[in-house]
Length: 252
Ligand code: 6PG
Image (cartoon, rainbow, N blue to C red; front, side, top):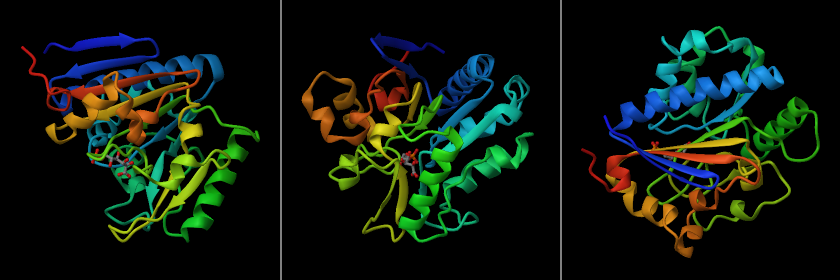
């Protein structure tokens, strides 16, 4: 399998053959990032996303050769966003990660910082913000060691949707997002928090996303219309792992 890699300053783009290759590459990146972070800071704090694309990654991290390369006692999980549903609901981002990963690795329960999607959205958003501030022991912006993001066909990421007021939020770390459809609201980390991360990893697959991917990875100003195009880490770096369909390129 051939991988096309392009590095532009703090952004690198890897075009891989398919979602399995994205999962494998992301799992290696996760292992390396966790080792570096634990070696330096004795902890690795990651914020993960829901949706379908990261599921293969979560499953891989719970299996060899990745599982035993990670010091799970020092890994802390947060979420980039959550749907306002109970944790047992099929739509729950917590459930997605718990079933495929967190229930299968020796991570202490206290290391899992879930967004309480079952609660009233504003209350849940504020509680999550308090949890983040308490964990990082600070008042400013937290620095997640790694944030794993996906992207929707409309260019949304986490639960930051095109034209949404939540994109303008500069004070709060987390906000509720009220959507017309589907009939559940969301809780999301805000742009300043995402852009303050040490490392951001986008996992994007499928032809349906190729048009937006080419806008965001292109040089035009149109990229700023898409929330995923506003992800530009202040101090960290961002890696896009995309498959050949999303890259609109054929490999080999
Ligand atoms: C969510 C995600 C969301 C997701 C995109 C892409 O809660 O749904 O956090 O931002 O990453 O919608 O979803 P897919 O990976 O399923 O295409």
